[in-house]
Amino acid sequence: MTKAMNNEDDSGPVTAAEVHDVVVIGAGAAGLNAALFLGRARRKVAVIDAGEPRNAPAAHMHGYLSRDGASPATLLDLGRAEIARYGVGLVRGRVERIDHGYFVRMVGGPVLRARRILVATGLRDELPDIPGVRERWGKDLLHCPYCHAYEVRDRPLAVLGTHPGAVHQALLLRDWSDDVAFFPHTLDLTAQDREKLDARGLRTIEGEIKQLAVADDRLRGVELADGRTIPRDAAFLFPRMVPQDELLTGLGCAKDDDGWIATDRTGRTSVDGVWAAGNVIDPRAQVIAAAGMGSAAAFALNTDLLDEDVTQAVEHHRTTTAERA
Image (cartoon, rainbow, N blue to C red; front, side, top):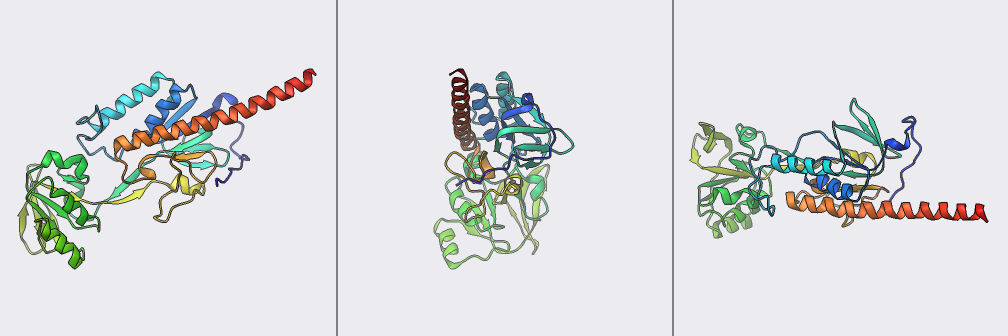
């Protein structure tokens, strides 16, 4: 059951021309695809973007039909050009908060009013404090096997045990290489974990990681605190994924048992008129899945707007008919 937003607000007068059908916050795959759908539905849409895409460090993206191997920047450039063709406005900036009444307040900028809101602000990857990790992230220190393992197949790989999800990551990577070394680092492996790693033919290399060994702008190996360096061509790391959901929590959107914003299948949150899509609600959503979530949210948003438009039209028709009688 959704909670209604109070339409009372102290934002000052807003003219009808300034009211958007939907304000989309975030211009990644989810936000842009939603804007594309809504623009084609002839809705008045504004997209607000801070210009900090999560996948910016990656040179290529994979698993996106017709765009496999394209750079993330290329996809976003194409998306921005496509929404512009349908009259969707793109506003550069950061949203400070969303006030009741669907007033979207930007940091040091304008206040936009909307009939509905879609939040597609994604998530951020929190990386461990190991020298070399941040510098190699998205280059030869990778996260998603499905996105990047094919490009480093059959090469010596490392998996850094900085997150409980690293064990599964290592077991999965064995399908791309016969030479996968797992570095538990400070991770406390269970006997069952060790058995699985051994059964899959992975090497488990004990010892705390000191840093990533890098030379000539390439990963050369993993250096341990005891002085050993294990040569590796590429490494994988499971980051801590933190949803950028402050705008949603600020509105009082309910969360699920895992601490993520709860939505229905279309992305509708517990707050009336507010939807969310992409990695802000699902850390597993790859680019193509996030785009699909944006499309599903846009379909539901347009239907919700239509229902409101029809209700208002019927009320106006009845009033007009009564006055003529």
